[in-house]
Length: 300
Image (cartoon, rainbow, N blue to C red; front, side, top):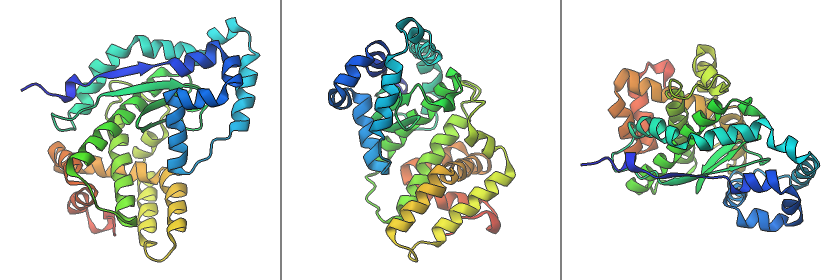
């Protein structure tokens, strides 16, 4: 029986990026139409609302205006545009290399049909919410398209995680499971990207540097246990802020979750890690804790 996952259709959409590069004057004159009609911009608004990170439209307007004053010939020669063109032209290469790696950690029937939308000058460098959005002007990429391609592997796995979540009909709710889900989701996506470095090297990915540093792993592990220890003793708003500041911005959820995945695959098996995607975040934590010493456990 053919593997549905490997047959997934991944489309690239550059409409918003092209509009900003070739017709920034229109973008400025039709701001609301641009943000409401182009998928990359709509999804960015959804992201902003979901994570409670406001879009600074004033700065965005100033940036687009400054960009519009750059001579057209100069615009066309910008590194971020060249990188975008290289990625678009290599779409099939990305699919041929990324899909087998991603699908090897997912059920055979996983459906990863998705569009990747490329844009510029939005707050996040990349995210998967509804579909995948990549900000080509993010300085984080360091003008290296391989950094972007590796992140696309990470974001593509978010689609797989959502598929598994829908498959199991996860109705578990509450602050604890929200934290567990965040660590599981971001952790496994970070780990899949980390394991894809032989395909798409990511020399500038700070999460991977921390995954290779024992002191950083211990620091993030301590941070996560500290957040978990606050459950029930601080308000939901305070917990959300702690999760955002430490778990997301300081990357403790990403690094700890990815390390947990590595432990499960290396001390258990790849199948054991795959099973956590079907069984859910609680099973992920239990599987990890069963494989480590008391000092390495996460307490909840």
